Every structure is written in structure tokens, then in C-alpha cells.
Length: 269
Image (cartoon, rainbow, N blue to C red):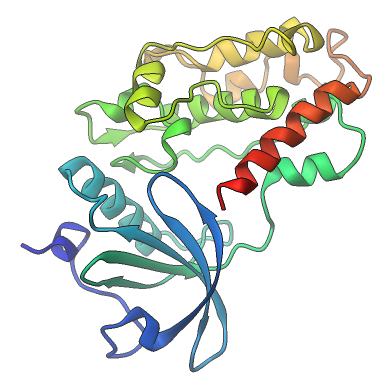
């Protein structure tokens, strides 16, 4: 079975073309990570703009990585929802796999928050995260947000992985860095598996103890011990009238740290 077969069966496309660039004009790089690139493209016939995720076949050198991409494609193929990108086509070429989807125009959350001027902890707490209840199969998403069980032998996960990811996102929004990071994927995986993280010494005193307790509440290695979304929403830090939540905007130093995280992410693209 070829790589395309491993990635979910038949090729999906709008025409009989076997080439990505025969159907789409690649315009500019939108983003880049450890698993591939995302490029802005334009359909040559309709002139519609799309996003193309390009994954090198050299990266897909293990069954786990092939399964991750296969699962991502399968989910996009099955799910039809206004909040989920539409899948238009999948191309498997000699040196890459290209996944063509609807273009998301909203931008990233962190730059939007930083551009808004004064930002405080209460603003972060009042951002309501939508947590899906559907079961997911395989490894999906950037490794920094992945729960420990996603690196193991299990192939099916529940919404517990979303609660872990919510803890990671909250950490990033408050401290402007990943809780689990490293130069290599293996380093990130080891830190996640060991729950090896610490609150930054320079910023922790500027954040309430309820906020850090909320993160610790979610970043639990055993998925059975993580709270479901309904319980997480009852945490004191998320209560609208919590007296323990600071109302003052972040300091200039705090905002500088958040913006540096944003700028550092932009440099990757």
C-alpha cells in the first residue's frame, strides 16, 4: 500500500489533475511548524483563496506520523460544521502531501489580544473556550498542546485531551510561552509525559494563585482525573464575580513578555 493509502484512501480533488500546482497557484507562506508549512493559494479556475498544508514525505517516516496526518484528513472529511475548516482536496506527490482547506481569516488569538491594548487576567478568564464532546482517533494538532496519552499506544481519545489543551492555552495566554517546550519533538514529548513544567519566576507573582491552580487542575497526566468541561467552568477563577481575580490590566513588563511570544512565533513564518 502506498503512502496515500496509509493516509486515508482515495485522493479527493475537484478535477482530474494529479498536481497541486496544476490546480492551485501558491501565493505566500502563512505559517510553519515542526510538521510542515501552511501556504496561501488560489484556485486557478475559480480564483478562490484557500490554505494548503504541505507535509514532506520525509517527515512521514513513522507509522505514528502517518496515522496523525491520516486522522486529521479523516476528521476534516467527515465533519461538517461552520467552526471547522472545509476540506477541498488532498494531493500526494513524490516529496509531499498537500491538504487543501478553506482559509481561516480570523488570525491567531494571542496577537489579537495583544493588539487590543490593555489586557488583564479577568479578560483572559472570561474568554470562553468551546470544548468538543466528540471522540477523536489518532494524534492531531501541534505537539505542544497534546495530552500525555496521545503519545502512547492508545488510538482513541475522549474530550479529556481538550481539557489538557485548554490548560496549555491558558498557560500561554497568561505567561506568553509554552508550558512544555524544547528544541526537538522528543524533548517536548518527554516533558509532557512527565508533566515537567513550571510557572515563570518573573511573571508568576503577577498572576493570581487561582489562575495557576486552574492550570494545575487541567494539566493532570491521568485523563480520568482531569475535570470535564462542566466542572472546569465552576472553578473559582472562571466565576464572573470572583473576588480573587485581579481587575487591573497587566503591567507593561507583562505585556512585553506576551508580545515577545507573538513576535517569536511570527519569526517562524
